[in-house]
Image (cartoon, rainbow, N blue to C red):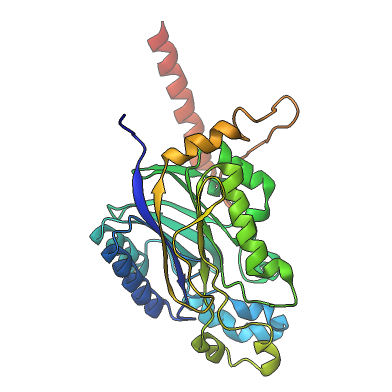
Length: 340
């Protein structure tokens, strides 16, 4: 019997960012892509805001203290289509690899928690933004919109991505499940923030959320996490009290199968490297035979989701708006003429 389901090697990155250094981060990212290529990886997933690093300072003191980092963070955030972004695309093409890259996206005077999905030809499949930054992240980042909930057809299957606590949003998850997602990238920061003081921010809770995503969506989940190293602590010149809130390590990178099972190798919390697993999409059929919450296991007569995937733009030019309406009317008229 011949199977038409792709099988491939996927990897989730566990690594410390080069904090507040865009070019340094890109150089390190390319080195990681090259390492993955040597191990025959076809899909590589990076952590949340890996360039220029997660803004841990937003959690470690009052806003007035954190303002000292705002300029450097903005200046070292990455613009879509910039020279740095193009370097990541070129590395993906050079190694014939799908790459999902977590970064702080700079757009005008704002920054967004973003993921860029790049195909093995170096072309951007999609750029997405986290719909709603979490807690104090909202003092740093702007919102995404409904167009950022999407699943994309690739050579490796239907691929989607979310950031961090987007995995705590039941309706957003359900929207992704409904699109037939087969491989999901869950990008996380370090999980060492407030260790021993806030269980919800730790590895146990957040890897459990990633595992449930795999089980609920019957998909593979690449949960990638950052690591805090001494260079990050030194970069922010943290006090002993602040170091007590942000510990070294924090890695918990794991890949989950559609039945929720962890697969692949494991790394220590302070270890940088790749978690690699063999992906066999035929496992999804068996998982969905038992329960498909957006398919045969759904009860749309009882509960259903209203989803708006339209972009939400702060400015919409009237001439563009009217042109689109005119184009739609012409298309409808042409369709009517053809049907006669």
